[in-house]
Structures are given as structure tokens and as C-alpha cells.
Image 1: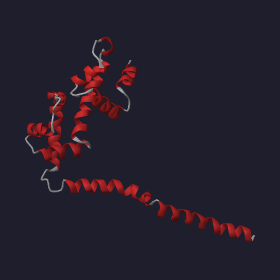
Image 2: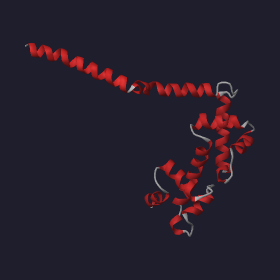
Image 3: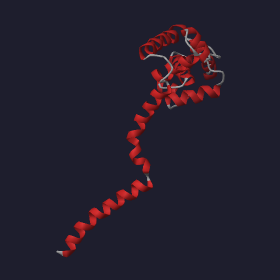
Length: 169
């Protein structure tokens, strides 16, 4: 009976000991939940004084999407954030803010996402029957070289263009 009582007291103490050890050795365990709140707070603080209201930001987002879809600005090899800002009649800083806040990505990731979608469409529409190479498609979609195309393609789709073609066939 004494052994049973000893085990009943020992097991909770052992569990508390393990928990305390983990909290001391891995303090980031409890930060997981708070991290998302911190990043949202940092985002709000980062753009707190820009003067760009949420309503205007959403309006600019719609205009930007319309420009990208109709004018296909991403096909320009030398597209810059300043170009987008000029077309939206806003500052470079505000253009960056609109992309960061509304699309949760950087300017170049935003542009490359459109370029990769264009490339995927071209690769799916009779690419194997044409004389074009993957490098030709990359250039047509706004990329300046094959390496940056492959890197962006893999980042967005998690597969290479050749694997994409094989899956699409």
C-alpha cells in the first residue's frame, strides 16, 4: 500500500518536473499563439501613420487587380513598384503597403505570382506540340532568365515546370 501511495505522489511530481524543464529549455513553446497576434500588431504599427485608410486600401487593391488582369503589367520585364504607384496615382510607399497588407506578399512575389499563372496557362495550352522551350515561356511571361523563372515556379507551385507539364498531360 505504501508503494502505491508513493507512486501516486511521484508521477504528478515527475510530470510537473518535465513541464518546468521544457518551459525553461524551450521558452518559445508558449510564444506560438502570441506570435500571430504580434505580427498583426506589428503590421498595424508599421503602417499606423501612413494616412492610407482601410477603405482606400481596398479600393486600390481592386484597381491593382484590374490593372494586372487587363493590362498584364507583369509581362513587362523591368516592371517596378514605381510604375505601379504611378498608375494608381499614389506614392511608392502606399503601393507597397497595398500589396503587403492585401496580398500578404512582397512586390516581387506579387508580380511573380501573376507571371507563374501566365506560365502555367501557356504550359497547359498545347506547349508540348509547339516548338517553344520552357525558357521561351519564361521570357514571354516577364522573367529575364531561366533560373529566376524556375526558382519562382518552384516557390509558388512546389514543383518544377517539367513536373507541372507531366502532371498536366
